[in-house]
Length: 498
Image (tube, rainbow, N blue to C red; front, side, top):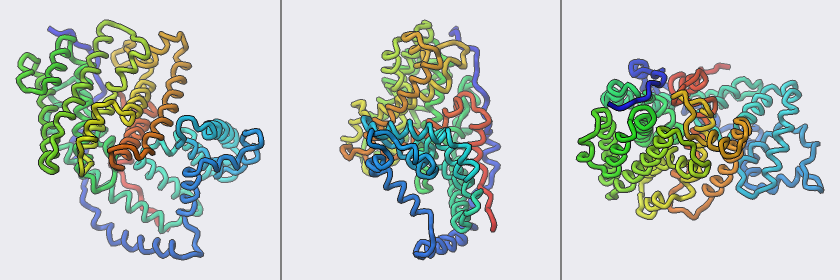
């Protein structure tokens, strides 16, 4: 009989009954009001005497696109002038723009350091002069806009804007209506996913897994929120839910022998390969096998492209990486930091997510693009690294099994003899450096991938920062993560009247 871990994860906060209890399909009642508001805003934009927000937005875009603008804030010695610290809005814009830099752009690095220090120092003064600006500064210092989940940030901005004394109520009402209409679409999709989850029955039959269908949908919205991409979100939700289950098989259920057999079955991608597995593992394999094959079938039906080879290879690579980590755990080994990271970027699951994202979003799938997934392209390596390091920082030395396992921080500490605090700081620095490399890669035109996938790569990493910002929102959801789910998926923004 297999010796299995006795620990278990938190039960789901969101039951299927709760998700399916909400009424949806109410967007029609908002559409007429939305049309009138859009017309009012159009008139405002055409009126040269009316000052509108897009001006400020275009100024920020101009700052972002021309990094040489930073030179105007520097003295003859190449240092930033302290006199600019009194310009709170300008400093905030520069702070946000500094996070879009590429590797080797030293001016942006200097700007980030200088501005961060002075914004923190002057935050109290800014709060007295302009409380709304102080709120924006505090928000940006915690996590810059470039690294925030877009849809959640839209809600945060609407609520912050509503507190401003100079808020334009026409723009505000339009923003509220738009957010709520899209949220209603998302909620309807989530209810479909809840019914699929019920039908699969995995949460009932597999007591060791994380029941996280709502969190999986949350992640899919973070990657692509626009209403027209419903099929993408549904397919991605299924995929992420299955990744979580397979991860739990390796972490919480299987013996080494079982995991080796399961990995072999994934590599063979055949129902014949599961004959000697336990019933739980057979169920996991069949759920994965049928779901992924269905996605590949849809690709072939709609585009005449066979994607199953790349999809199953991505899963085989993921499970082999999981198996390496399971061996480290069962033998209580602490690998070298480099050995850990060489495996951990694959075990992050980002590559599996992105190859499926490409097959779900792109209307012109090509062999050239599919082949890039086999070549460990930097476009997938860098987000995978950030994914892994954010995950590890969220858990640090604390582990659901109650033991230190092979993670980046204990590996780094063991090798360098640094404290946990300093090791965590090094991981944060590595995240910053990897972001610069990823920024450059995403700005390149030398890629076979369309813009939608490039946006998904960026939005996936933003969503990862959101999920792991205050802890592990998948393994141990806290109150902050629950509030975010409620705000994004269940609670409409209140309509504000003049």
